[in-house]
Image (spheres, rainbow, N blue to C red):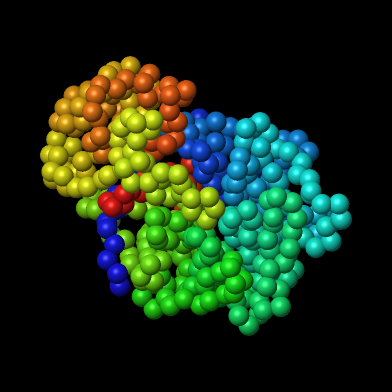
Length: 437
């Protein structure tokens, strides 16, 4: 088993102005925000929210009108070039059998829109409603695999939606049964470079632990080794991080959620279970959602990022207010010998209009953490702040004409919702930071 840097888990308590706790929902991140749609608490939900990572607040968005989806569960949602694409999750009825359950949200206009195909001929083949499928963005297409189809059970359908023409097509339809994962739902899938990676899930009623990759260049499936990897899983989540896949949670059954975080390295093709730092305990979760934010979580399946390394810490020749780093340090005033040397930043929430000076002064000041702002600290993002070279005020940081605040996000993974669920309480949110960030 390969070695992986340990991680820090932090619970992020949410205010009453946030979505209720839920599971079997869908979420995705785009431009520094996390979007969450539907799912279940005691019943199927029809609500749509945006979470600002920088400001640490929720905004409920409109989810009504002809173009908006109804109540959904076990659906998918992906982001591509200013639009969110939602598929499946309808409650089964005769009405769902003849329609294609695809909805599109225009992020700039903040409204649901009717999508139109850009070719003249009518679309004869398109996927029907399903639940527990996967959807990833690879290049200029959304790849949709499997799902549970009413009256048919687990599906092995593999569809591609071309964002340019908004047309559907079946992928590898003649080879699916013998050369691919086969029927599958409640699995995970993510994209890296030119490939899609699929792990586990349910094949009928049986949990799986097989690991597959689909190559968009030769349109072929390949089975990957998983001898030292996760056990049988369903209801888990996976995201891309640097040259790795992070896989979290899930369980061997609906009633056995776990809190294991696994890392698969694409370069060495090895698995490693990620250890947690002392005093840091991840939650047991199943049917949750994970969203990665920060430069290391950016997908490189399309246009590559324009900056990296030192350039990523500079904007118009100026040093970013922080770099992404987290490591253990003996800060005894935080109440633990193994407390994490972290600082907190959230515009207008953590420090109001105070001037942020040299990082060392901020870290060594008990008053910053123990004073009147102490009750606000727990709700803010945490990261090491070692890159100050001059005094920097909130106005300086928030000048959107000058710089894009979302470019300054630290590397972090958010875990939202999932079972066990806390009823109508605010949604469960956890932040995970790797020490190699």
